[in-house]
Length: 218
Length: 312
Image (tube, rainbow over all chains, first blue to last red):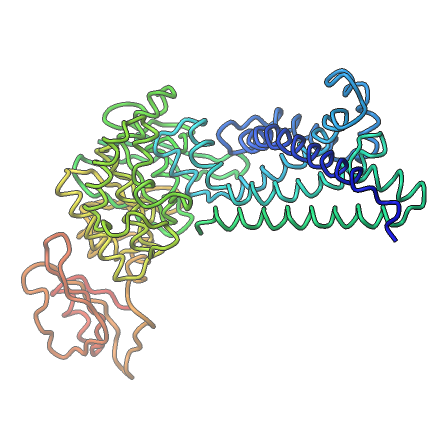
């Protein structure tokens, strides 16, 4: 039992997965929040209503969201090489992970912003707020629990994306599961990696739920 | 102070006009009520004053300045001179009472110390001093509206717009909030434009009132005149809604009459009449009585000499 499991290799795979997850989640939030705010603000009857811009951004977001991640990984290779200089390893996985997850998170951000009380938005406008102040003082703070809950969902989606990124040699737990667990029939390796992924997902969900509870004042 | 000149408003896609040829004048220091059934266009009307809505035609003047002609900076300046409170309060659930009240000052870029001093005064004035560290979710409806009022006054406005300020509140809380508005009106010389669908609110605080129906002003005048002697069917409808409970039923062979009397002797007894329901009180400093009576059909004529008598 577990004769194929090499602790050093498992540890390295864990680190790779966590680095990929951390870096791509940070970039996804950094891109997803402005993108979600843009989708919200340019919608009809919103402060920066621009129907055509809204349609254009919305379409790009939807197109990116409809490409299966495994395809995106391969299509993105030239772009990835251009950005990080390689399409391999942890660094090579991050651009496709971000491109896959940011549009998804942007939609979750947009949905959270829409749920901010209309009266609170109107009250802020009636105080003479600029659009920037409306975003930073009302929309984002009031939507914070929703933004965190959306971030949790996105982080968990990214965990399964990182596992897929193993296909293009990204490293990490998914890579280990595919190369050893699947291709070499090492069931024990498969078991351990999947178990570690389960623990990771549980931890993320617990952390997200705790943060949502702490920021909710309703 | 606030002037509407031939203002119409049409919303794209809905066809009809929400507001049609509105002419109104709100004088400095008065409490001006706008009453109408829901969907009459009164919320749109009040939002034209601080340019949350733009008129399709006509002009809205605040202190002589055409609101539609203001640039972005001018509009922000106007909105600091015009406070607003809402039916649903519009408070920030993520901020404490003190931070909610201080938000307009923060948006205006005031120093932290100046903010703290001003917020303390305002919170104390609306009677929430012990609640300043609480979040809105921990407050009652009446307390939330007090926070809304304190917040609306933070930048020292000369005008306060009230959009159905008491519609989410119970009658007792409604009275205390209206009393506060009346006090602020007197202490600060605040001009108040108040939207409501309840005649009771008009009766409690308004100096003058405009009745709005189908997007247009159908009747306007002193609150007492409109409440006691309103002529337009829409006004009569709003007044009769102010009565309590089920409509009175006339006893066999008797006629049902609504008798409204004003001034001295308005509460004098009436021979041969049975009082079924009614109210005796004061409105705008004038005493009045508004009674539903059952009388012999032959007596109806005689009641007309006492005041305004309508068979119902």
